[in-house]
Structures are given as C-alpha cells and as structure tokens.
Length: 306
View 1: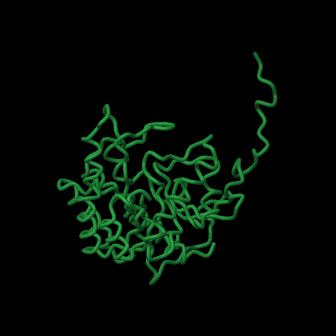
View 2: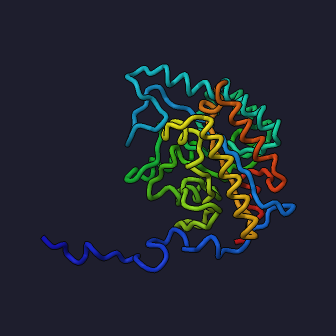
View 3: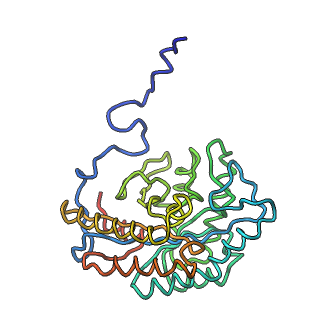
C-alpha cells in the first residue's frame, strides 16, 4: 500500500526549523554575550519547591517523582514533604556559604500548605518563578484551554500575593506543556519559561500573544534526572556538574561569548544528609573559579541584547 502524497508533505518544512516557534540559529553565530566584570561563565541554580498530592489522579500520566504505591503512598508522600521541611534549609545554608543567588520554582499550592517556608523564601528576596499549581495539575496536549488557563492564573496569583518582586518566570510541572501553554504564559505576564531544553543559551520564543524568552535550565544535570532516572550516584552527579563547569568555561573563553551553567535541584533529593555534601562540593568547585559569577535568570536576561 502506497501512502498518499499528502502524508509526505508538511507546509512548514523548510531550511532551519519546521515551525514558527523560534528562529533557527547556530550558537556560534549569535552575538557575543558579555557577563559582568568579564566573567565567562554564569552559574544559575534553581530550586524546585513542590507539592505532590497523596491522592494523585495521574491525568494524563503519572507524574515522575510522584506516588508509585497503592493509596495511601505515605512513604513517597512524606519523602517529598521532607524536602520542604528539612532539606531546603540545608540548601539555604549551602547557598549562603558559597554566595549563590538562586531562583525558586514554586508550586502555587505551597503558599497555603507551607506558609513558613514561602515566607522564608520571600524574606530572602530571591527570585520566584511559577511552577504550576501542584505536581498533579499537569499541562498537556488536548487539555481544555480554559482549564489550563485557570491553572496558570491560580498558580501565579498565589505566588504574586506573597512575592516581594514580580513573578515573571515559569517552569511547568515536569516540563510538560500543551499547545496553548506558551500563549497562556504571555497572557498572564510571564516573560521567560524554562520548559524547552534544546539550547545552552537563552533565545527568543514566539507565541500568538507576543514574545517569550526560553531559558536553558538543563535537564541533563538535574539531580532527580541523574540520580533517580539514570540511576547514578550522588558522587557521579557531582562529577558531571564539575565536568560541565570545566567544559563551559573553556568553551566560553575560546568563543569569546559567555555561557550559562544551570542546575535544577530538589531539596527532597540532594537535601538528604548523605547527599548534601556532594552539593556543597560542587558549589565549592564552581565558585572557586575566578571566571564564574552567580545570578538568577531575571538578572541574566538583563545582560542579553539579542
């Protein structure tokens, strides 16, 4: 049986990208990025503060990192809660020790469920990003647009009510989107999002409601991905992060254009007593280089003129 010709044709197929979401460009051919004080490498550390419902519905799929046992899965539920009760405070001590200025991607539901924690983050003045309503309220293809709009509106309203500075960034739960998510983000005042992991540097992203910045928050170096998904040790995670630091520093110096080392972390993962030391070792190694400066994503975008 021969396919009809229409099955082999795609109206957007052309040189570059087969869609209009962003312009095709080679990283090596983009305008050079200059970080403050001539530093070749920017370190961006993002922390995900999350709420995993005990009675998860798993629509349209069971969330990675969520409940896996028959209800009530108290073992996994309480382990995730450990991050917000214990692990996060180990993170904060490490950040202060090594001069890290992190961002925090926060589920809107935590504003009511963990007010003391959210108050601590707000008092620190660190940058806050939207991270959906909770980890079982996913954005997905085919979702009713009004249903998804409400998730975005409710999540951002909760965070903006407690954040001392504007909330203009977004990381979708498990980085999952629908075909409408970027438009809904712009509609609700979001200026950058971190769901797409197809670049090492920020780039402009098009939506029907206006432009967005796509920020390169690495999935490959994420603690949960490396340790839980790939089954590597915390020692291996630390080695991979330090290798990435060395490579990006060398690449930035050779190209004459700045690079970003972005680490996405979870306090229920690296905040454990047997793992926190590896986070501290990684931060000590990275910040021990003279060519590294630390910044949150909003500040990084302020230095980019492309």
